[in-house]
Length: 435
Image: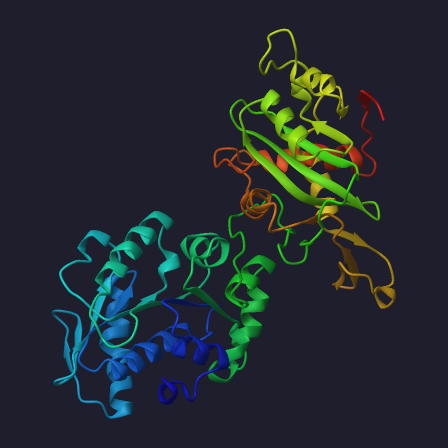
C-alpha cells in the first residue's frame, strides 16, 4: 500500500497501510477522512486485483458524490481503466474486479454479494442501533479469499458517544484499531482561514469533536461538561488499611457505590460497586472486599426512611449496624447544589499566578488556572466515567434519569457534597456512628 499512501499525512498513511482487521480513521472536519478511505480502497484493489471491494456510505446521495465523481477522478489521475455503472452503483475495472458502492439506510438490503475488503464512510452520523445493524451485515459480506486477511476500515467524524466510540474507544475487541486525526494535520489542503473560522463558530466541545477528532458529549447541556477522562484520570489504588470513603445511591435491585481515597486532601475515585441487589448485599460486598479498612459511607439521605430488606430497619440503620461510619444530612442537597459541588471538584478555576503553576493537574485556561481536584481511576470506574461523560439535562432542566446514567454520579455526588460543599452554601450535617 506504500505507493498509494506516499502523499498522505502520517495518520492517513497509518490507516491506509494498516493490516488490522478493523482499522478506524476518526478525524475532525477537513482532516481527510474520505481521502484516506478512498486511498485505502484503491490500495487494497491493487493488492486484491481479482476480488471486489465494497464502499459504504450512509445515504444514496453521498454515493452519487463519492462513487460517481471522486472515484472516477481519482482513477483518471492514476491512469486506471474503468467503467462506471451508475445503475448498479459499481466501478468496474477490466478483468480486475470492481468497487461496489452501497448505502446503509436499510441494513437489511446489504445482501447478495461478496467482497474481500470494505470501507465504511461516516457511519457515526447514523443512529447507533442502525449503525450496529449495518456493521453486522457488512462484516458478513467480507468473505472472498484474496491471499490476505479480510478487513473492514472505517472513516468517520466522531459524533458523540455512539457506535464508533462503543466499538473502538470504550470496549475495543481484538483487531479494532483507532487512528485519530486533527483537522490541522490536513491544513495544507484546506483554505487558509478554514480552521480559524471553525474555531470562531464552535464551542469547546464541538471543537474537540470537529477539529481534534475527540469523542465528547455533543448533547446540549451536558451535566458534567468539564470532565475529561484524560485530564481527570489517575492510577491511584487502595493502600493497606487506609480509610475508604464510599458514596452510595439506594436503588432497589440496582444499588451503586463509588469508593474513594484521599490524596493530599483530594478525592480519588478508585473503585465502584454497581448493580448490587439491596443494602444487605451491598454491606456483604463491602465487608468481603475491604477487610482491614475503616469504612466511611456517605449515603443517599432517602435511606433514612426507605426500607431495603427488613421492614423494621432503614437502609442507613443497616449500614450503621454493620459497623460503618455513616455521614449523612437530614435530607439530600438540592440537585443543583450537588451537581455544582461535583463540577467544582472536577474543574476549579482560581486566580493563582499561572507562571507559578507546576503541579500535575493544573492548567492555564484563558489566563486563569484550572485545577482538577477530583480524580477517577478510569480503568477501575468505567460506569462512573461513562456517566460523567454522557449524562445530559432533560427537557425540564434536570439531570436525565431515563438513560440509567444517574446512579454512579449521584453516589459520588453525596460524598463530594458532604466533604467538599460548595462555598457559600452551608449544609447542616449529622453523623451516625461518628468518627
